[in-house]
Amino acid sequence: MFFKIKPYFFIALTLVFLLAMGSTALKADAGDFHFNLASLEMSKLLPEIPGGSFQVKSLQEISGRTAISRLDQAGLERGFVVSLAYLLGQPEVEAPLEYPDVKKENNYLALEVARFPDRLHGFFSVNPLSPYALVEISRCVKLLNLPGLKLHFSSSNVNLRNDVHLNQVKKVFRQAAEMDIPVILHFRNRSENFGRIDAEIFISEILAEFPDLKVQLSHLGGWGGFDRATEEVFRTFIDAFAKNPQLDKSRVFMDISGVIITDELAVENGLQSTSLLERWKAAEMLREWGLEQVVFGSDWPFVSPRDYIRIIREKLPLTQWEINILLENDPTERFLGEEIRTPNLNILKLFLQEGIDYNAPMSVNF
Image (tube, rainbow, N blue to C red; front, side):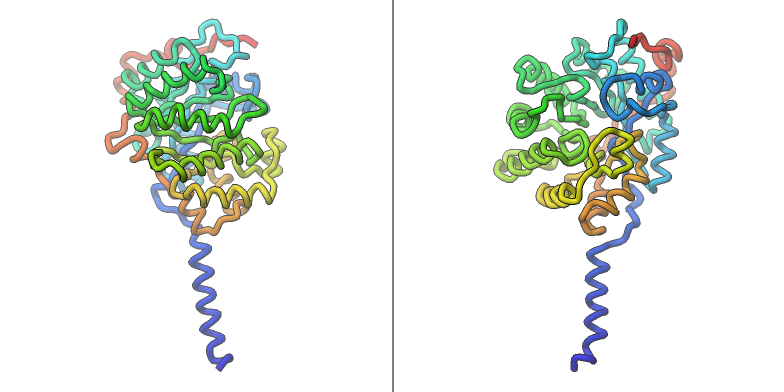
């Protein structure tokens, strides 16, 4: 009897294994939901701007065509592409014409997105502590017709434990909620003790106060890798949403950009490589949070989307079926709605001038 059922046993076992592993082919509408664009003038500055993963790179213009090429190489259909204008408001950057420089870079993003309206969705950016933040948000939505906002707490030196910072940031998030634009947020700041308290403030003072706000937290709430601070923030979000049914998880996504760091990426970008234990912790917490609320992002030029998909498949201890869920999640409609704001190239060309409104030297001094 044993020998008669043995072949069927192995067939059944094989089927179970294949179901668990899943296929590596992605759905046609999968995307990269954290991809940076930069004008030629901005690209010249990136190696000189203090901090971040761009310091050691010599970069060319990161255009919409660059994004499309990288998406195609990875077999991805669409992308959320992000302006790096927020870097011009970084405290260490001296820019006598800071706001005009910021407008130039956000204008550049709008022009590039307008060339590929079916595949690229643009997230303009600003330092939320700047005096022009609310004006620029309004301009980018109403004049440029861009659908989303990127904020970077570390580059902008935001600390929510500072009441002045918290009050100003709340004005920005209130405006985003009222204008119905989602925010891609690099949440981690520069503080060495950043972690649980910061996450609790954000959840209670911002997410709970603005129930219509839609947010995507980059790097699972950290700044790359899966260190103590990232784990602490992610755990705080998991526990808070599990305990409070009033919090709407459907409007909060985590993106996995920069979380799984190989030795090669660690050498190039200065982050610590993600250990096996950290990868196991990340995988278990991703399951707890819910894989359907996690999206893929490469944070290019940190790493190409094709290479990061390979790294995730090889290094993140989830089944291929689970990884496919993560890679195929598409927040576009939930974030941007059925009628997506899209810049019109012909209209932009009527009032934006090359050399004046975009793609002209910045006023930055180093």
